[in-house]
Length: 419
Image (cartoon, rainbow, N blue to C red; front, side, top):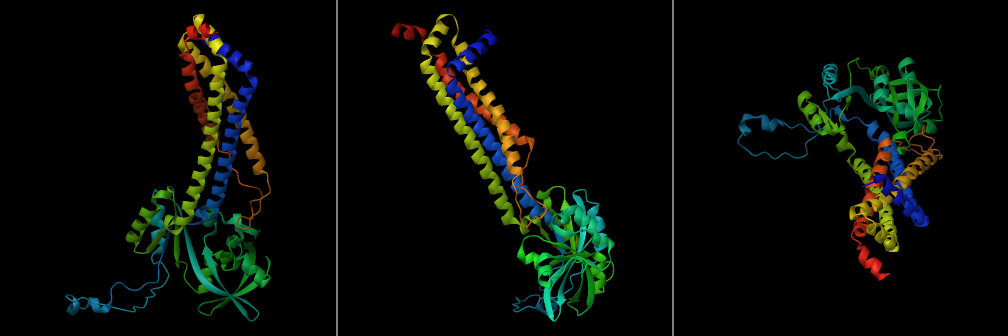
């Protein structure tokens, strides 16, 4: 068996039907190009949405929730141990939002090998005063370097710098909606009133925008020290502990473990964003399904063209067999023919797919949710190109295998006698 000779014969047959071969290769090229462009764009879009929601949400949040006490006085009485007690209209018990021994809890969590880092936080409701009008809002007290490391808040800061909160005392980065209502800009001083009636003046060092009206109209950020001073609390006062894990899938189990260990309430990211995560998975599934369908359709095109080529080249096949070529040789010729089409179409498809992705990545795209993004998001991950060319070669091989098997079974005596 002379592989080189069989390859040359396949090239000769390919050139003899060059138009059909080009059409088959074009089908592969188009399939791969659309697969790469579609998957790159959709995964890039998913990544952007993940940054918008999932990456801005702690994997685990520890806090104290206001809820009814589980142990009511009537149940604690020894006289009622053998009775069934029915209690209605239980009032919630406010034990305070502060997480006690927060510094020890933070140190213990940081020592956990599953954890990337921990960000303490204080959430306090306030009123923003403008003349006689009071606008309800929330100030989030944050550890600026850690918050930026874990949640990339600077991506949403449209004016000013997030780092200024750690440098300038009594400073605040205010939500876009609140800034528009109060008509304030960076450098202005605003007055806020706490729920306890305490008033303070804060300097606006920036404006932050998430593109969600309910958030932009209420949320603002300041340093932990500023919020602690605003509420008259000590440096140990913390209302939330935000945890980011190395493995996101461990969040539900780890949250339950921390809640039991530290005797606080805990919620995980899957519970907080279950609907969003489902939508992201559905979008990815649709992208891959459409891309794979395009490649399969291209494979059927190659199958049909090779089938027609066999019927048209029955004489050539008969002559090859009559001159000593075995059925296995003829089968290899047509497999070579199919793979040449697949490789040529695949390489062109990779180039075209990259070009389309590059064009999409330069199309202007502006969203209020991510003001720092100016063009459509595209993920240029090399794995999509590897998947595309691999699937194309497998598809073209299978598409050529069945016609090749048919050609290898051709009886040259019957063909020549019929002629």
